[in-house]
Image (tube, rainbow, N blue to C red; front, side, top):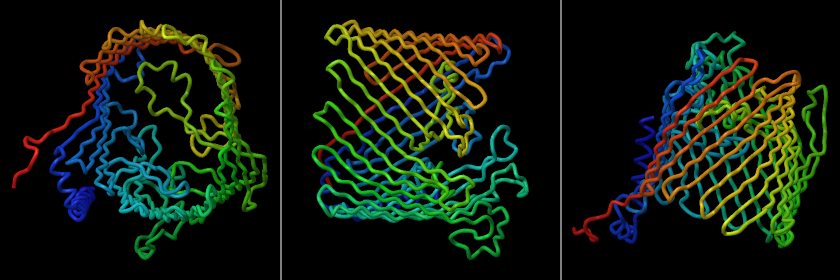
Length: 574
């Protein structure tokens, strides 16, 4: 890792040396040697419960920050970090504690530490890594991107409650060409698990097998005719799903991928055409992804499908906006499944301004998508923003329907009142790629909220009623919540807020818990750079598991800065 840092720094210095013109030198001599901006945040959280089985850490702290340093007006050095003593993620493949630096000079940008890059939806698609990356844009027509680093850290099989994980290293390269008539790119990505990173028994079926993968793709976008765009992309992935029996001597010549083991080949293709006019746009697309398609450069993939769709969007005098996709989808492309399915696929988003006070939005889709779902029970029992950071469920949805209605009752310089009504329905797939928590679930969520504001007095009062219903294959759970929030600002520096909620959760046969959550928060700002926030919270849960009470105090300090280190003299005398 140290060598990577040295090579990156040397490259930046070399780029600076060969690209500095006489005009650049004059600009450098006049500019401030160093300009810094950014912010730091430090939170301390104390938890106490009179119950004997306290589940939260008695004391934890969270330190985070983002800093950007500019040298002589030409070199940017953005830097960010996050650290906590809380063990929420210490034994998971992607830790919470992280450090990243992204220096840039002219057309050179480097990524050092924790970063993410995207080459293609089918190769490297935003997967986080710890290592180094480069983006070079020497002109308007060319771009070179490269990365290498650790995609997963090792997690030993003896770690309690955590799935073992091999250390996974990966690297990739992407070349882009862009002009007015054509855009084109090619990319390649390689990742492999280190079979020696953990001690394991290759015959143990409970341990995920080490994998090896190489994938590549190409994309072209044609803009030969005004307002008409044609795009095509192709990618393939070669995956070895089990290299546990790898013989390093016999496979020394396999530079691209280990050929011993469970080897599989996948491919993906997508094309679309679109034509834009003054009143909207119309287009069509075709996508085909082979069964079991996956790469180690992305977290999740939809595969084994063929889509043919048409789309249209239009706007009528900013009064009505609509975008629609409709098409045909089928699976079982290789004929290996017992049951083959085909269906009509569609999605639509519509927004309309019915009057100056009334707005309505509706959307629906049966396209398969992945979303993060946070458990409602965790939300209503949460005492601070850092709680439950690692409880997201990455869920595949088959159907999503939502609507939102907003009505402004009053809008003057003195008062403002409005009502918002929202509804959402989500249907999860029966088969999930990873987390099975929401497999086959049907989730309903309805919300009614009212906001009242006295603008001169800086007083905001809001109330919300929320109903959430989760229909699982084996049972049904529902939560009804009533919330009240009062916020008041005193002068420019002091703000106080009081938030309270009462929630009742139940299933078909009984009430599971009645929950009261009360939070008092005060914030003070000093000289626009320093802010202090103190939050006191109490959560009481009375249900089938007994009566539990949790108290929490959260003290947070934020510091914002923007400083320029000026020269003592305007000219540098030689």
